[in-house]
Each structure stands twice: as structure tokens, then as C-alpha cells.
Length: 91
Image 1 (tube, rainbow, N blue to C red):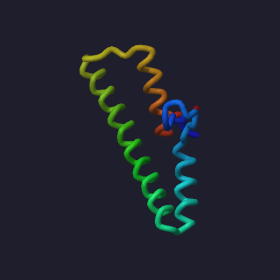
Image 2: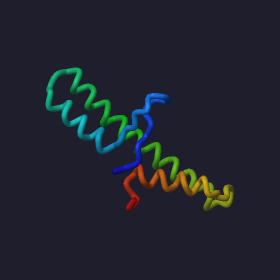
Image 3: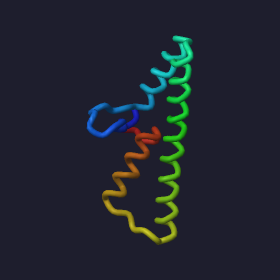
Image 4: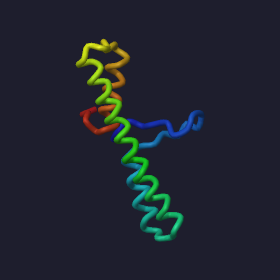
């Protein structure tokens, strides 16, 4: 399962891409307009999130390869977290 993402500060609720896919499918099965809208919005936000993570990873790679940035241990943790969310990790 991919790493959880805090949905709103202070709520204690963590979201997962896999669970979002299950919820979207359940909403689609209901068939009513609001459920269809919610399912489409979940799908849309998952695509946006994946694109944002990919852009962040690409930007970090570019800065490091251009010698404009030296990675720290914190950065390596960020890269590992991105890999987990994208599903590129075996953890």
C-alpha cells in the first residue's frame, strides 16, 4: 500500500490512493449524480497528485544533476516518500 497523505491538518485522517480507488468505484455503483461527481473528482485528484509528485521528483533530479543542489538526508527521505506514494518502492 502506498504511503498515507494527511488530508486536512488536525483531522488525523490519512488517505491512500488504493482506498480512494475503492471508494470511487463504490460511488460509481450507487449511480446517482452526486456520487458520480464525487467518483470523478476522486479520480481527477489522484491524477493531479501523481503529476505533482512526478514534477517534484523531476525538479529535484534536474537540480541535483545540474550541480545546483546537494541532497541531504532529509531530501533522501523525501525521495523515498515520493517513491512510496508512486508505488515505486518495495516497502
